[in-house]
Length: 305
Image 1 (cartoon, rainbow, N blue to C red):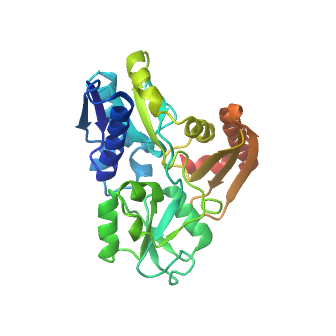
Image 2: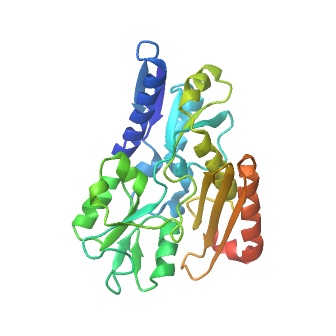
């Protein structure tokens, strides 16, 4: 029996069910029993404040990781973009499912794009990256904290609390909500958060039987791309307190990486693009972070803490 730990939102459950279905497909229902356990996290319970004010990415993982560490569950299923780069001792990420669409989408009843929103419009978003990129495009637009699950954000939009919102395309695809997308934001000019669109699986270090069961689910190219993105994130001490973006793709054995850091108001931004051997993915990400840190100067990062 494998016990899967997950948050309780519809999207988190969809991701856990995808992992369950892939495990059954790989090993057969008769050979592997699976139980899904819903675990409430602090990030799900506190919805009236920005993540940057209450602790960042770990708010969505702490309680789940505690149960994983204690053996109450065998694996934890997460959105990779929610994962801190430093994991608790004794835990590791050993499996990444093939990545879904990595970018963001624009949803609004009042305009087709951010650029065509009325002057002074309001966009709901809890992401500092999205807020900074919006401000870079449209400094006249007001952004307000917009937290909660996908359904609650869409309900607030429908009620007219804001004029528009941004969501991850992957999440809407997994929830079969593609029809609500007004337009897709190009990843080249509106790059995603590191790890966005990818499901990761966390397990205990040394649990070789579980790792054996997970091995057929791991998508090598996704794992390689995320090695670069998470290395970039680590090099910048990235968390939900930091407006940064990172996206890697693979082609013909080469890895293409685009990294960006921004000031909260979007007025300052530094970015880098590079191509290198896929086997050096982590090193490429780390080097990109080092370059941007040097270009921006340490004073740039003062407001990130």
